[in-house]
Amino acid sequence: MVVPSVNVSSHLAVLAVADPERAALVDARTQRSLSFRELHARSDAIAAGLNGIGIGNGMRVALMVPPSLDFFALTFALLKTAAVPVMIDPGMGVKNLGVCLADAEPEAFVGIAKAHLARRLFGWGRRSVRTTINVGRGRFFCSRSLRELECQSKPFDPPAVGPNDTAAILFTSGSTGVAKGAVYSHGIFTAQVEMLKAEYGIAPGEVDLCTFPLFALFGPALGMTCIIPDMDASRPATIDPAKTLATVERYRVTNFFGSPAVIRRLSQHHSPRKLATVRRVISAGAPASPEALEDFSNSYLSEGVQIFTPYGATEALPVANIGSGEILAETRHLTELGHGICVGRPFAGMTVHIIRMSDEPIADWSEELLAPPGEVGEIVVRGPVVTRRYHNRDAATKLAKIVDPRTGETLHRMGDVGYFDDRGRLWFCGRKSHRVVTPEGTLFTDMVEPIFLKIFGIARTALVGVEREGVVKPVLCVERLSPAHFPGLRPRIVTLPWVEMLPCLKSQAMKSERTSSIETFLDYPGLFPVDVRHNSKIFREKLAVWADKQLGPKWNGGPA
Image (cartoon, rainbow, N blue to C red; front, side):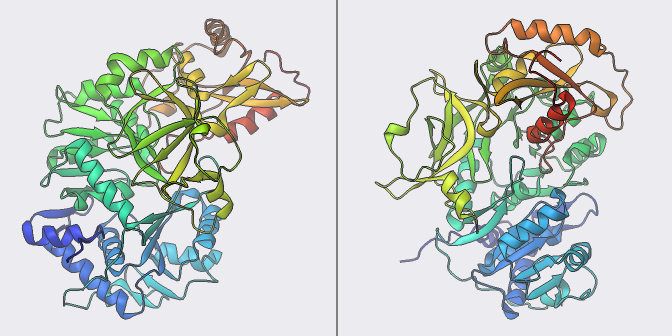
C-alpha cells in the first residue's frame, strides 16, 4: 500500500510533470523567474547539497532570507530534506530576534550576508549553530555558500514524513507579548492547502501576488504562479500603490493577498481603471476597516469580486471567513453600534467554541467550560490546522492549549474574546489581554473603539486601562487624521482641533451603554505603534504605558 505524501513540497513534483514550463515564481523586482520544473529541480539540488553536509530529518534551521527566488527554493529544499525551517520576522528588532533564536536553538543558520553579520555581531545562536550557509557571493565567513550546495544534478529522494512530524517553527508576531515559536507539522501544512483551495475555489493556473512571505509559500503548493512583489516585506504599510497595481496588471494577477495596512494604503491611491483579472482579494492579520474595503472595492474590483478577511492566528490558521459583500451590506453597521467585528463562519473542518473567560491554564476540555449562548467569552478552536505546542515554551503551551481527554485532540485558546450570533456567525470583540475591567463592568476594545470612528477627523481609537489606587479606569487614546496617514501623497487634511473634538467624543460616549463609563480621552501625537508583521495590530500595551505617563500620578480617574 502506497501512503500519500503529506510533505507540502510534494506538490512541486506533481506540477513539475503536469505543467513543467509554467512559471512557478516571478520576481517583480529583477524580472527573473523559475518554472515549476526549474523550482523543483533547483530545490532538489539544494536539498541534496544540504543532505550532503548533514542537514536533514528534524534538524532546526534558522532561515533569514528576504522574499526572493532563493527564499522559495531554500524553503522547499528544507521541507524536502525533512529539516525544520525556523521562520522569524526580521523587523521585530535585534533583541527580540536574539530571544527567538535562543528559544529555537537552531543547529544551522541560512541567511544573506547582512543576517550573518548580525549573527556574529550579536551572538545569535552561538550555543547551538554548528553549520552556516551564506546566500550570496562566496562563503562570507560561513561553512558553505548556497551556490556550493547546488552542484548536485540528480533528483533528490525525500525521506518519508508522517502527518505529526515537525515541518517548521513559525514565530508569532509578538504583538501581545513575547514572540513564541508555533510548531507546525506536515499534516497542518497539508490541511491548510486543502482548506484554502476549497474555501476560495483556487484553481491551478492562477497567478498570486502575495505581500506576506509566509502566505506566498502556499502559491506554488496550490498550483499558482507566485509573483514576488517589489516592496519591503518588513514594512507592508509603505508599499508603493502605483508599482503594485502595475504589477497586478502586467502579470494578470488573479489572487491578491495583503494585510489591512496594504489594503488601506492601496485604497488611498485612487485609480480610474479596474483590475479586471483579479478574482479575489484576501486580507488577514487584523480586522480590516470597512471604509478601506469599500474604497478598494469601488476603485479596483469588478462587480462580484470580494475581499475576504479570514480570521485566525499563527497557531491556528484559517479559522473563519467572511467576504466584503456581507461586511459592507450588513455587519459594518452593527460594528459601528458596538457589536464587535464579524469574522464570519468557521471553515469546513474547524470547530469554534466560546468558553467562560479565564487567565489560568485549562488542562482538559469539558462541555462545562462553555459560556451561555450569545455571551462574550474566550474563543477556542479545534481542527486539522491547530498547532499542538510552542517550541521550548512549556508555560505558554499550558496557557494556550487544552486537550480533549476523549479524543486526544488539542484545542487552541486564541487569546481573543467573542461570541456567536443567532445566525452562526462569529464576532470578534478584542484580545482577552486588552479587556479593561472596571468597577462598572468589563469593556472590550473592538466593541468600544468603532463607536467613535464616525467622528470627523478621527483615524483610529484605542481603549486602554489606567490604574490608580487599585481601581482601573478606561481611557480612550485618539489618533487623529494627518498627512502621515498618506505617505507619498500630499492630501489636504481638514480636521477638528482637539478642543472641538473632545466634546464630540464625550457626547458620543454617552450615547451608548457600552461607552458611557469612558470620561478620559487623550490626543495621541502621530500614528499608533503597530505590529511589525502586518503593520495593522495596535500595540495597546505601549499605549497604556504612554497614557499612564500622560495622566500623571495625581490623576484621580476623572475627565482629562
